[in-house]
Length: 430
Image 1 (cartoon, rainbow, N blue to C red):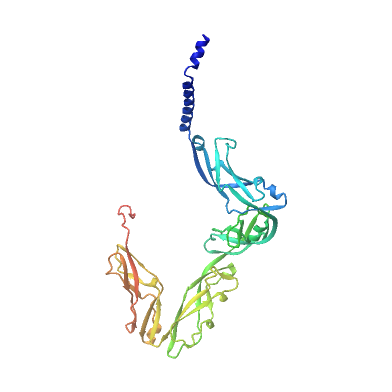
Image 2 (cartoon, rainbow, N blue to C red; image 1 turned 30 degrees about the horizontal axis):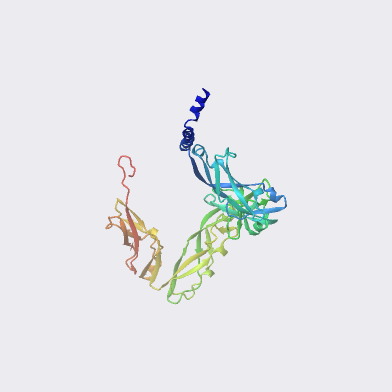
């Protein structure tokens, strides 16, 4: 009986072994097809330093020589696991215990939370290492300047700004401290309209104006950090008033002047701005002695600002003044485009006049009439014959006394556009 059973087991033994191996392979293949191993890349994973005391306990400092603060991590795992992994689960670590003392290279390792010891997951970082340079420690004191972003409320300007503290002691590796060029306290002043203290963030810049990584640096700021006391001052627009000195050439006379800009924006204390409506430039600044034609002067108005008053834009100190000197019997005017009236505009069109500066218009006539001539509200254009959208050169008509003659033919560029149609029932445009 035993021989019979043994015979049954041993018969076709090779085929049975092959069948068993095939079954195992098939089982593995089905498992692989059902839950295949896949890869997924996660970018911008920040890395953290570990065991820094290995270097710092010896009184040394270290500097990361590679200009990176994050890595790309590729995770390879079965699909069922990979589908549940996101960026927050991944940590990249630089363990300074693993630093090569000869080359300074330290590997970057990435782990997935919950799978630190799992053999089912593998990770790869790019780059896969960084270079650490060990140096002697250095310290230096730096003044702190202020950097602002955004603007105060309309009608107000930034006055004096005082940083607290005014200096900061920074410690780090020698080469890093040598690279520091500027330390800045950055504050946001958006919408403020009164004196206040603003918490600041500290930023460090090198000689090329690039912001430096503060990793590995220590500062003596304590828990309070840095703040800035900000003074807020009111602002206003004031007119510019000019006078001239001297006499033009014989046979010519002074007919007036214009300036660009005509007003400037200043700021200061309430006391300094009270009653200030104009800035007067003394006559000695513009001398027209012997002048026989229109002349331009560039005037720096900064010296004539009252005490306690400053320009809101410190680069806007230069003003262009055009002085008009005319021959007897002639006169030149600068006509502002915005003062030109528009007549006979079609109801279905809108009109826009292109402004590229004032128009110069020249008149001749009797002296007594020229002296009284005022064209401020005398200019107009007639759009009766312009009925289609488009851009046109339209002549300017100036109504003056018949004994005064306009010597040139001024034109203005006008763009006509179709108005949006209004819905009769709702009053809305389509």
